[in-house]
Length: 273
Image (cartoon, rainbow, N blue to C red; front, top):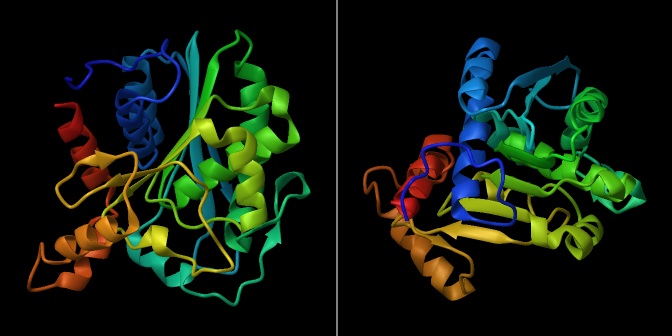
């Protein structure tokens, strides 16, 4: 299997190729608008909309950023993440009360709820405008962006199921919701949600359980960069211990190092090559 040379707009369902290209799209969310538009055009997406809102949440984050790129057969909305140190600090705070989840299902981390609420109307209006040709729709994001991508997918599926996305791919996504929302999401959307976690990435381990949990469909990247669709718990614990020995002088840094988007991309490229 080789790294594909262009964005595949036609295929459906899960594949590592799709995971790679949506990871590229998630990484692109960190770039300036002009760079996003230039790259999107090279990938065959002729229309781009930028989403940027400011708000005052109960943690050190002042805005939500995302973009939507649309072609004749496919639309992708990618949410921007944030720096590992920043997201780790405020996700470690378990005192923030949760907010009601989409469609009245369970609860969501309040910070994520506010971040998505600030930008969702613009994203929704854009999708209504651009999705006029039966295009497939995918949400993607890294870190905080992964949480927002999952919640956007959940909100569309649970509140307007006829408009539901065809897939959500996230990378280094934190725990986002409680078990009730996770179960409602998994029940009807489980075959379209894929959550990639790179070895000891610290962000998917936050916020703390049991209040918050993950949705299903984990894709685990081991300490050698291999992607696993299943990984027994004891095997995963042993592999995470191996990851901690990667830097004997700073073993604690592995959790932050594994969170960087370029390490996700490197691992996916390795699996395709």
